[in-house]
Image 1 (cartoon, rainbow, N blue to C red):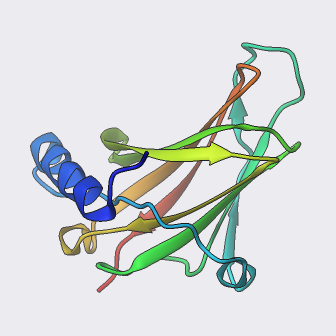
Image 2 (image 1 turned 45 degrees about the horizontal axis):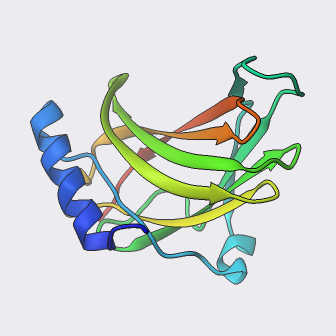
Amino acid sequence: MRAPVHARRAALAALGAAAIGVVAGCGGSAATSSATATASVRSTATARTTAAAAGPAIALRVATASPEPTAGKLWPIVVTATPKVNGVVSYRFLFNGSQVSHQPGGAMRDGVYRDTLLFPARAEGVPLTLEVVLKTSDGRTADVQRPVSTRK
């Protein structure tokens, strides 16, 4: 069972502050509605896939309700995989190429995962890279990165 949003945000704040002196984080737990996802801004990149298991390369797409998150407001995110796979999604947050936070996501089913992220006010204006990592049930790993900068 996932921790409440406030608990995950507090844990992230402590980790981010210790890592770089700037809290660059988020936490999330609520699922988004399909109506939110349809009005999304899409960020697509070719995912890197490890060859730990046989199978085609996985392409990940990250869709968000807005191009950048707003501090203190939930930011819906939808991750889709092609081909449709099952697996576990997690998030890494990078600052100048160094990981400042790792957050759990949840289970991807049939190539779709929905989540909501929450960025604290301390992350405003901090240029981060959000890396979405997928570990499939057949042993493959894929990831995709996109820049984010939290606004007021």
